[in-house]
Length: 501
Ligand SMILES: Cc1ncc(COP(=O)(O)O)c(C=O)c1O
Image (cartoon, rainbow, N blue to C red; front, side, top):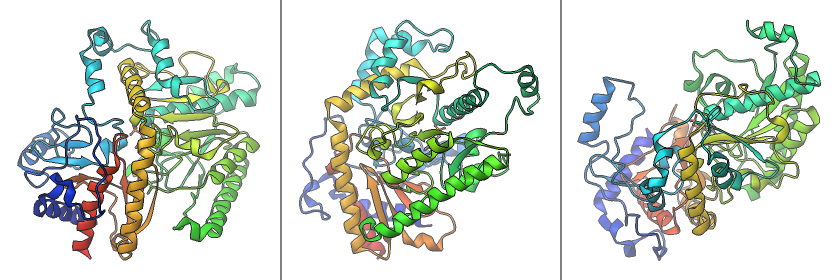
């Protein structure tokens, strides 16, 4: 497998070259970027065993007696992990470019977050987890205002917190359906027939509405979300689903400058298909209530589309009366160089719903006023989020602002992407389609053409990477990833490629 090959080579490279602790010997760039990281970060990777090491293997066996451990890479020592480095239970310290599936905003054990934990005034927020929908704490409105609402996407003043990404999308879909039905009825009062039929899963109470999604998308693994997830069969196999329309997502050719005409044609083709599907599903009696789309299809292979594509998509939703849901679960929180990836589009007419989780620490979604259900308990669950996560998020946002992390992301993302461009020029038989926005970057590995499935994690012994799509490596470092971290990675990667050539 390419993944394990790369892992092994990365490890060999590290074992043979203990230069990582001596940045002056970098060979990818003539000069390593100066280190200015706050001193809670480590200097570089450091390996003691192969990965998974003996202790990890022991624990995997132990856990395997309790649950499926097929996806476990290794066990971690979170006490010792710091900044951009994840330490495992065998004492290996790895540069983390995957950050727990893109969910660590400012690195491990950030001092600002540890300080929050040590503040006795915050104790009750950590100890008592309320049922927020019925018994919120006194400071909850203020907490929301200083955390989530301070980064609300344009056009949105309302936010609903949830626990995870899937749960956020699942409830966002419900909001779109409720909104659509109210629009159709002209009011929000259901008929007696609506009320009785919904209890037995029949129309009109459970209407035949649909959500349009894109091939290659990932919106979660719960039942409703899964009907809009089309990245890998393993997620969907054996689970009943809805007959909802699936449009093609543009497959852009790289380098973009060379294929602008072809890419524009490809995007037009996909947009035409979207409109056709909306019309077809209306004729089938399953009108499209909303369209859900990721700004960059992540799990499905880091597939990008142009701002033009998304602006046109927004216009199509308006034309056909569907809601426009932008799933920023993976792209949100600054990783593209803007806090929300969809800010890159320059939308004149903002989205109706923007969902989030991961780097935001809490799940949830922003919505336009008209999308909010009027009645209580229609969008509801026991916890509806967790106020302690809002507390952390406020501090994360302070750090992002204080340390200008969005600018850092733009800088380090440029260094990473330029490095990938250079390596792909050097190794055209191995690497292709380097692409990215901020540090949200990816590159394809061509051997994968000969592999059936390499959609698994590319973690290695000194650098932790993730895979996506059929043959891509995705980079998802924390926002504190600096240019010199990019150089450390590129040096290692360059060595690996040289050995594989
Ligand atoms: C774009 C997107 N939406 C939704 C989800 C689901 O989030 P969760 O795994 O928290 O349920 C993910 C998870 O990777 C995602 O990337």
